[in-house]
Image 1 (cartoon, rainbow, N blue to C red):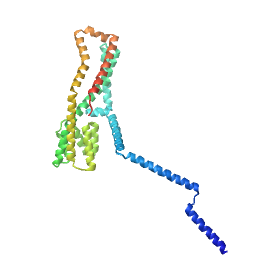
Image 2: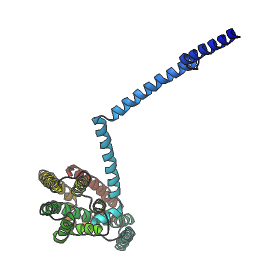
Image 3: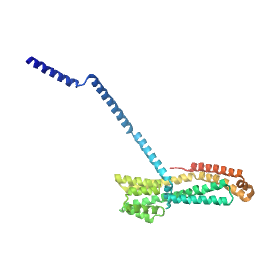
Image 4: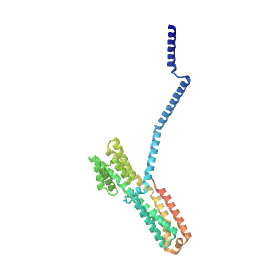
Length: 325
């Protein structure tokens, strides 16, 4: 009996040792596990390399550039809507009212052209010009004029904020001073900013709404400086003083570019206005000679073609003399 118990005990001990060393799996399972561990190690190494590649300064710079380009495209698309253009122009019209006025102007121009005996195609062209082109051009011209005046006075407004902070005034009181003493459109826009702060908006939200009404680079720089100072702290007067220096240098650069491009601008204006002026002078001196262009079908098509070519030439010259900085 004792030899049998000793044999059973020895078998159990040997089997336990074998289980410990072998691990309870067969050789194929162990090989599969080892392969998976090697594959996992390779995968982890590849993921580490990919992470390291994305953490390089060049990759981060490229990612930031793509994000900025995407944000700029979204902002440009938002600024191209008719509602945004009406805000830029400072008009209180709704988009529906603007379209009604445009349609009324186009229909009036069409009826007047037909009443004076012009050709149907010319009448339709005049209707499109007065219904689609002219109202949009007027709104865009008013908006660009307002943004130009705003940018011209914005550096002075930042100087007011810098001096107010250095003398101990809160930023909100500096905004009130600018709203009270600055000319339009800078003063009214800061008045809206103060009113927005008064109804509970944060400074970042109020500045974002102000940027929607007045999308100028100077205001965008000011918003970025304020946002960074609120998150990181620091001397706001010094940061805004540096911003004032940058804004004035940027304005000087714009004036220098304008002076250097003045010859090209004058040449483009002369070349663009020369054909209509010559045509008007010939019409005044010999009306019968020019009336064929308006009464004959072939002359009307010639006028249409020349107008298209002139528009294309003026557009190309405008692109050539417009500089972005």
